Image (cartoon, rainbow, N blue to C red; front, side):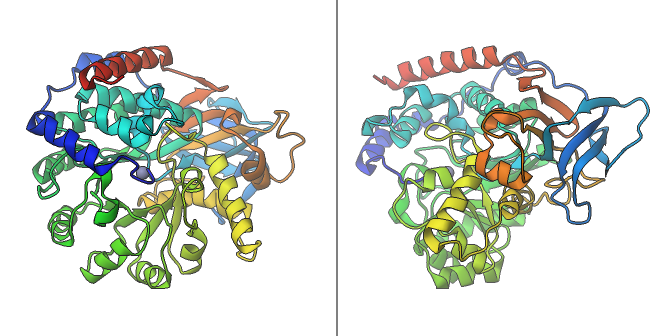
Length: 474
Ligand SMILES: [Zn+2]
């Protein structure tokens, strides 16, 4: 999320008033509740998508104006003009673009179901005041329900991999609940373990539980693990907490000893230069929101292989320049993220469109940013950011089958021309017809295949009402 708009005195007062009680371990989420919130995932089968306009995002495979994609047991078997696969189900891809699913690289799923509480025109009811006030009272079940609702939206918008920026893990049970929601949701992703809201800044994160979750996720084919750090630039501490370089080194050294990656919100030079001076930059570090930096920052990031995630829809509403252009010119990899869906949509099409518009606005188009490059950023670029490019991000035989079909026949898209232009300039999440994750068809003809969305909504509403009561929210 962008600016920490919550007045810090309010935050401190709330933290003090709640004290340790808000940080006490919570009872584990009931397994029955978890499993009752959705139907089991559909089985992986064997199918061929036929006659689609295939954008493989792999130069060795290329694009096909009318091609077939063969999927079996969760893997891409073949991408060709015509595939023979006796016994395989046929999925009609005519009039559709077949492409890798979107790989977004930073999203606070635990906040999603709070959106009915928020008001854009009331400063006391915007993202940070609401998430902090209610977030202090989350049970593991609340975490589970918000993540489930959020992942349903992700799927509907064609996102097949997400980076779950979980900066309110209030106990080991909350961590388990978020992981369980990701497993039940069926998407691929990284769980970024974070500290609970309100935790004292001089207290280290729960590294023992992080190591436990690492053991639990070992060998998981769908989920990986990392941490989301508290801010290291005190001036932008706010609700996510703010630690100094010594605490960052202490925590990050331990996290790196576990072989886990790190993500951090930071805009401006302060934190980058602090981290550079402390020797803490690295290729295992993702920064979020590339704004208000300078040439020395870009050079340091490029030198160490540190990458940035840009959330165009939110950043466009923030003061300062969106600097993905400078980052990319300096050799810093940039991927695309959703951030949150309380004030913006999960809309990777709009994100690409916004980046293109900003590039034109700021450089007059001097920086060459093709529509194909934008689609790369939203697919294989995201996979590279999350360390998954060997498994997903392109329609490459041998990779896992994470793909989407995008309809091209709607009034705002037809008549169909260049597919990359159509995706960046014109398409919307409503055009996503079919979503496949690891060979499971989770959306078909714009509908969930095996998900009781109404129950997710009802569960979310029940949780939010209980949280409002606990927080005495009016
Ligand atoms: Zn964020």
